[in-house]
Length: 359
Image (cartoon, one colour):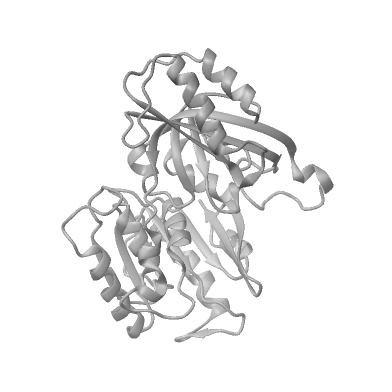
């Protein structure tokens, strides 16, 4: 069993992304989840999971309980150790520095030497209190809204201890939209782009398509976790800009920061409603639909473009992730998709992004 330390403000969304790198993900407290198995290389490429640890045990979110758990737990490791503690969202009364000292002393009493600089093993101690919000099997906002307080979930108090197994690479700040060679306002931030790429199935050996690729942000993130990526856009300006960005971030021979070879990339001008792609040739489709109900894109109205793109995505792939400023769920169902999950991601006061996961 593994402990997952989630990031961001939406645990259901973080857990859905984590499922691309772990098996049987279940949330146990705000900011925390467990999984039956993890792929350490895949964890390195997650956006909204910071760490995965080999779970030693869990108890109540207080230091006495954590100490008792560590004193009784079987430990089959040798070498030096360090303890790293966190009070998730500042939700408990546990001070992380005190937890590190006291749990470190327990390990010393059990015969371990402490090395804070370069330990052989790191013990993670995560303390979290709050309400475990209800979620229908990680499906986000699909459950009814008229459940009153029941939807707020149960009150939980959890301390989880685990030996650090893998950490995600937190280099997203180096790919901020404004820092890319080609930039356009409204570009998706790399954290969300990485998450939706992962949910769509980006990984070594997979092929991911973005039929409205814009500046190429989603394709970059998919390529950095090893997927081969294909992009089209109706505007020549965008395809040229995306080519510049993809060449900059993926056109290198060395492994990506996540430790895997960078995926190959292909971008050209094209119509999302008439893709030059064979049936079932793609593993996952992901696109960020144009915003604004009155938008007119090239020769299509928005009301025709998105349904047409959904139909084409259904023809070429068995999974899709759609990001938009409103829900296109009914149009997705009409195109033959089943709605697996839905999430609302608040960007700022005037913009909420809807994320639909389609199978």
